[in-house]
Length: 102
Image 1 (cartoon, rainbow, N blue to C red):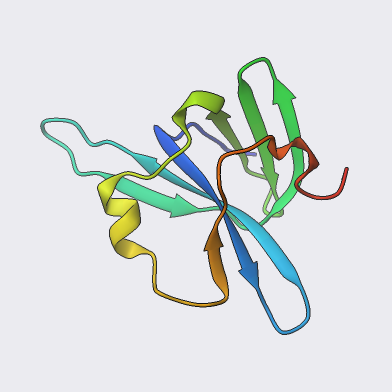
Image 2 (cartoon, rainbow, N blue to C red; image 1 turned 120 degrees about the vertical axis):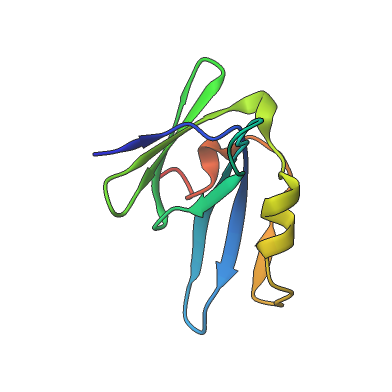
């Protein structure tokens, strides 16, 4: 299991022909000598709230530890998202019920 702690994060809702998927998109600032990076998880299977941190479990076994106050996108994250009617960036909310209690 790998853990990821993004500096900024959003929840993506992706509609397919027969289902809806929810994924975490995380972004990290590279700092002075590094480059900003981003990644999208494999698909959320479980959501937990631990204090001010969401724990988003992915279907690959990874866990994204996301601070509630860091919801939003970096410039890089916004630049790589395609314009697509099947893709929606959800508004900041209480994500514990995202999967219908799952």
